[in-house]
Length: 193
Image (cartoon, rainbow, N blue to C red; front, side):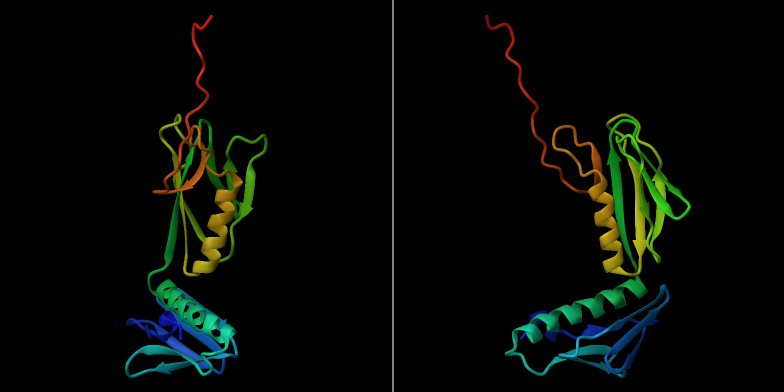
């Protein structure tokens, strides 16, 4: 049995859960999310205790065990998303690098001859704190937020892939608080004749 799958998902005040067969809909103050549960797993909602239970009838089957914990985690993410939301913060290091939002696209100028344009997914909001870098020390800063953890994570990964931080000067796009393993550049021999 999955240890995570056995834990009930607690529903906070202001969040409503609707079950129709395999379809789960979670509604909160920030919006609503829905998903279809795998047919191998059953979901039960106890309205008086305000908990969602995930039931695995055949714990010996490997796929059932895998889907047990995964289903519980997905429902817990939906509940957290509609009540609190999710956010990822970024920093861009590099002279002349900048970020802008134009016509539903995130435009990143990060040292290539053409700017990288990424279509902002539906339900994801972008807020820019500092548009451009100042030298190599003061980064451009922006953040993305959404109620859907999966969509937010995929968009965050696509943003970072445009220009991952390089190990010598640390130029590139990184998450706030991310540690970059730095390398020392070439050491030149001096005055040896």
